[in-house]
Length: 445
Image (cartoon, rainbow, N blue to C red; front, side, top):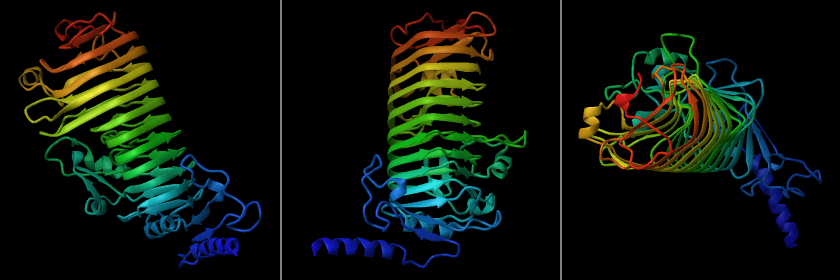
């Protein structure tokens, strides 16, 4: 009798899951496996979070948009609500789903989103600049916020930020200008999330940073492609960083390609336990740590990062660490960072350690040195060539006078310059860095 009651309860739960009012064009289906009856005889296989695998999940679909003004925001929220606690939302291949309104996503628990189609945001600049989610760090805004636990977003589809109108409107402006009020949305943002996996999808033309991970634990990206391009040579896709983070423990990026107009990978304050492998970056500002130490009185840190098998092409920077100096800077540390097996081609500054960030001249940096300690940094097995823009310099390690900048190691550095014998610059570093270096004053510009 007890067994029958349990089975009846399971069947009732499944029936109730499909008893909601269903929007036009939407559907909910439950899996039929093994016994041919929903709710019985499956579930032996689990995902890495010990939840149901794809085949064992109820599947929710919604109608696609008819055109680029046909907003399906309400349908999308409905689908996510139905997928709570073990469901799957499928955005189907060959279909486009338009988001034209600010929407509060539910706090998700054990939800899969299979993105095989295109999830596209409208480019109504006036609307989005009045309707957004705001984050004070560098005046960040976003279309929507993903939060919750055990969230998997995967497939072969695209999340499209529709950024061209934003690139046009931002031309001539700078994100770190204190007077800037032209805010641009981030394409993908997590906040208060644990266990987030993103696999296989493309992030296209974000108006600003492509991803921003906030107050998140254990987030991973695998086999992802990120691109931001402009059809207007006078309006570049500025600040379209591939990856940014704030207050994150556990960030993994693997087997990923990034072609954007700013940092390829750039964890920001209070990010720790970072793993990056097989990352390809083209035309970017590099694979960076920071910047941190921007805000007065605020402690920032980045620690425990291992990055290997990195390719950096046609960019401004390669491997880079950025810490603010100046009279209003904050404090903190960057510690235990290793870059290993890095190949660089046609890049202006292949290796950079900048403890006089942002646009702080030598005099000001000496008067107001960085309060961000930089320790235990390794650059191992770098190959390739610079662009020659910085003369013969292939590595520039510039620390603030009097600041802590120690245990910096360069090993197996095989970088060349088209201008002649490569030079490595080091200023105000404590201890041996493992290679011969010269002061900035002696470098060939």
